[in-house]
Length: 464
Ligand SMILES: [Fe+2]
Image (cartoon, rainbow, N blue to C red):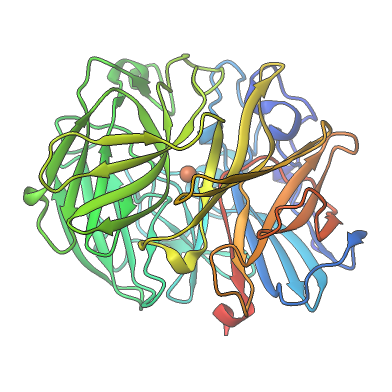
């Protein structure tokens, strides 16, 4: 077992009154590697074979509760290896960013220097045989499968500015698409297409009047949509030293731009929309010449100031249509129940599909809560929920299709849940077709996994 890194053992159990430093938002205190078997209720489906990776913010030094923002904590990766119905091991490691080197004395990564170093705390994806730890405020960090930091990745110097934590992957070819927004623009937005071998092929600039926060985007077979929504860079907040100097401004015209893939950014077509915000896109696809995107929408966010909850509103799933012959987004609500972290079967990315899944989302006692999961059939409007008992909370569920699965709900939801009664985390597997409240398996993990953002399940087949 690896020894705890003494530089990273500085967090008290409860660090203050900031909601993102409380309960299961608070950091874990050390880096750990443990071999299984671990205590298990039920049985892990033997076909679920691979590695679960998760990423989330985990401050390495005690932050000031008055100014800490959930999006700014140091990225910590968690890795759980499943094979033949067993959990073989658990491991967690910080991404060795330059921020971490400065605050905690860890080794700085190789690779290009950035104007502002990012915390690499939002997502981890597999692309072209690499693992990439991602945050939208910085360049990717290339990681090994064992969670060692290799370098800051700028794709041979071609990636000119920070890259989104939500790149998209063509399930047939493995090609990647991505974008990045740049407070030091213009251009404030760039769109990138990559091949399947790790090469950045093309970049085009999108003309925006100002820097806005753009967390995710929508990609179909022939089109890509960018969200120019009014969470805007605020110079005053930046000059005050705020690490996330963005604020909601409903005086700014909200709009979404649709661009044909392969076209220059100057050809983008803008659709106006009421002020709102989208962090996450479930999926997008072509509908004849029109484009459709299923998105999780906030009426407002980044509107409560520094040191508190992210925003005043809770988000709902909507279908947005971008008619080829129109200028307005056509919005259709799918549900009035709040959710976040929408996911799909990776095999249906960019094409028409049936099912999306997400974490139920709410607030209680001043804290964000994830009281279960939801599955939607986006075509019929049907839904199914897994409501957790009071002492449990979920987070982003990942869908993994069974090897013999034919549909985008024939597989499992792979989740990490927080059990308040034990102040501990479980790996929990649900049958995504049945959506039964009783899981297939619940595995007690040796280390608590704080609420984070995103992860990926890499099957053994993808690793070989
Ligand atoms: Fe995200």
